Length: 217
Length: 217
DNA sequence: GATACTATTTTTAGTCC
DNA sequence: TGGACTAAAAATAGTAT
Image 1 (cartoon, rainbow over the protein chains, first blue to last red):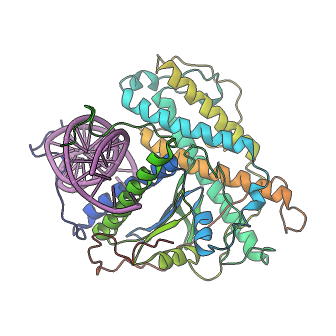
Image 2 (image 1 turned 45 degrees about the vertical axis):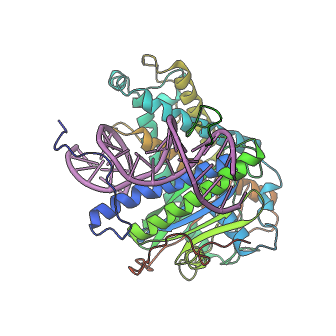
């Protein structure tokens, strides 16, 4: 089905800008993912904060940050000042959020394993597709369900985006924030920060919703 | 000349914070170098701009940037004129954070269960009471990949975390903030408009990172 | 754009200098 | 902290969906 020629496998490449546009795009996606993964691992293994900002060839912005991009950037820009702004949120650590983060982190690891184990059993589950299956007594979800979950999440993401547009409109009609200036980083930061394990990093992507607006969510 | 024990070669490690201080430091140095190298390669191969900021366990700051950190950070923070970061407003009380969190938690539990059962058979479970909070039918589901689910989850995690944080911040600082309500949702937006900056092609090999690429404070 | 595959190329954990 | 070394763990180029 899919065996053309012999030579398969990684090829060595020269370190210079890739000529073929198409190839460049693929490489960019792969390596960007790889870079973010490396960063994530570094965060987890060494418990450090990292921020990465990448401007894609297409003009989009991809960012990665632990605990988030802005806190790191802020800390970078103002080395002397202790992140005061962030304390607004950090003042009262929310156990639920941490719990959520922990769960998601575990989930991600699980999915990795699940993915490896086998997608053979996936077919069997195709038939068991239901509406709102996520509400049902969850005891066992197959890959089919996971796929549905994925779609559902994307839908959610889309909805949030719409809302973001509305919100933005509202903001522009108002003045500004008490202590948030255009070039100052605002509140943000979630997940555990400080020390102790967990890989609550975040990989984000900018999504375009309007003719000239990118919402990051 | 140096053959102490047998076990040589790379060992697999678990993704959690390294316990041994000494080991952690070594790993940090190596991986940081590796991360920067990857970033460098991405710059060269794809001709894109990147900025990386890393706060070491020792409190130092390491950064990598092409063409330099500040330009990328600046571009990230000031996509254009107006636009305020982290605008928080609740235009319409649509998305309820609590519900969202509940759903996510629920989904996570579901997946946890799946993992434990070791992907047994997938019998159908009754629909059960539902409350399509995002009101979006998810019937026509294509053959998705777990990898995508993973990405979606990571994005969602960030989204939920941020919203929850902002919500808390709103509650704590409700006295004085414009239109913030206890159940308001926060959405942040960074723009990347117009500026296309298609990374110049004059990217010279960034071999070893020169003193102008590494900043060690 | 993102993924799947697979043969190779790279990266790197552990340990010693 | 920065190499050196070995061998196993990861990342990934090229190609096709």
